[in-house]
Length: 368
Image (cartoon, rainbow, N blue to C red; front, side, top):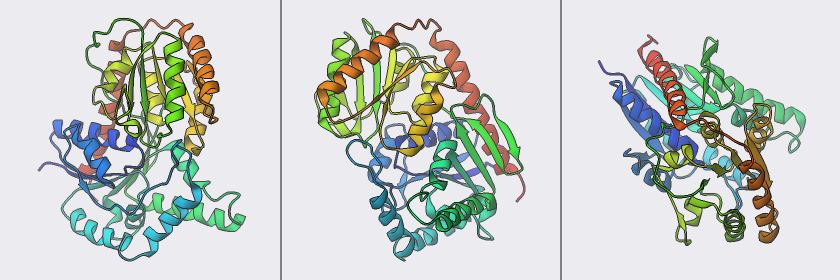
C-alpha cells in the first residue's frame, strides 16, 4: 500500500511552501500519495506554479509583518489569540483535520500551526503528526514573550510549546548549518534544510545577481535603493518579489529562480533558512537584507561562523544611503573569487532532499 501523507505548510513565509512542494514532488516520485494544505489564497497560488494543487485550510492564522518585513509582535499576538479562542477558527480547523488525519499515515505540520500543535499532543492523533521547523524559528518562538511578559509567564509559554512538540510522533528540525542528517533523540531528527536542484545555466550575458524578497517586502523606497545599488555595480539582476508585483523590472514569482541563483555572481535576499542554504550548497556569495525578524537575525549572526561568504545591510528608511551601502557590500562580495560550478551543488542538494524523503517514508511505514 502506498504511504499516504497530508502536508500542511503555513504561508507566512514562502520557505515553508517551497519546502512543501519540493518534498511533495520527491515523495510522489518515490511512490507516496501526498496532499498539501496551506493557509492563504496567495500560498495556494504560489504552490500552483510548482504544479501542486493545494487546498486552503484556514485564512485566520498568520504572523503579521509591516512593508519592510519587520515582525509586528502586538498584531501577531492579537491574531493568534483570536485564532486560538474564537470557536470559528482553531476548533473548526481541528474538526476538519480530524477527518483528514484518519485517512493518512502522516500529517506534517510545517511550521508551528497551532491546530496541529494541539492535535499533536492529544491521544489518537499525536502518533500521526510530524512537526517540521527551522532550528532558529523554534528558538524565536520559545523566546517570543521574553521581556514582554513576567518571566514565569514567558517560561510557561516556552514549556507548553516544548511539551506539545515532544508528544508528537516526531520532530524534523532543519538548519542550514547541519552538515548531515542525524537522529539526536528517539523523536527528534536534525536535517539540513532541503533546497531545489539547479538545472542547466541560463544563457545571460554579463554578471548577474539573483534577488529574492519574500512578500512582506513592499516598501517602494527599499526597492529603489536596491535597484540603484545593483545598477551602480553594473549587475544585471533577476528581481523576484511578490510584494513588488507590477513594479517595472520585477516579477512576483519565478519557479526557475534556483537555476539563476546557482549560476549567479551573487544572491540578494533576507537571511531566511532557505536562502542561506542555497548560498551554502551552491557556494554563492550572498547579500543579506536584515530586518526585525528574530529568527532571521539569528541566522545572519551564524552565517559568519560557518564561513559563508556574505555581507549584511540593514534598511534604515533612507533609499540613497541604502543604495550606497548595497553598492559597497556588493563590491566586497565581487572581490571574493568563487570558482566551483553548480554541478557539485546539485549533488549536495540531492543528498539533502533524499535524506528528507527517506526519513518521512520511514516514519510513514513504522507501526504506530
